[in-house]
Length: 111
Image (cartoon, rainbow, N blue to C red; front, side, top):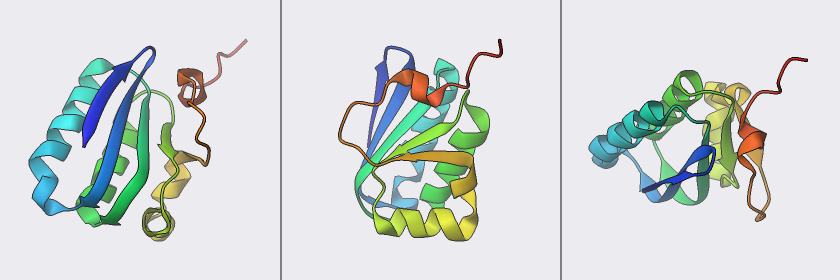
């Protein structure tokens, strides 16, 4: 897992198995994302497995960071978990290789 601070957002890049063995790293990444106070994008395209600790990470990010959480190219295993836990209702799923602008994760400005 890698956390990258970009202009206007925090991007977490997840790969491999996202499970309880990564609990300390997941907790630290979420705390860093919360502290940054920026919208969060999670690049999940290389995730091969995810358990409840990964879903808990996504739920916490979705509820504690500004704007809607953006998930980039999540594989079927992640999509299934989003659906059965209903966390998918709290995130935006992007299926593109193009860079996602930070504004995609921020709510529109009320005019």
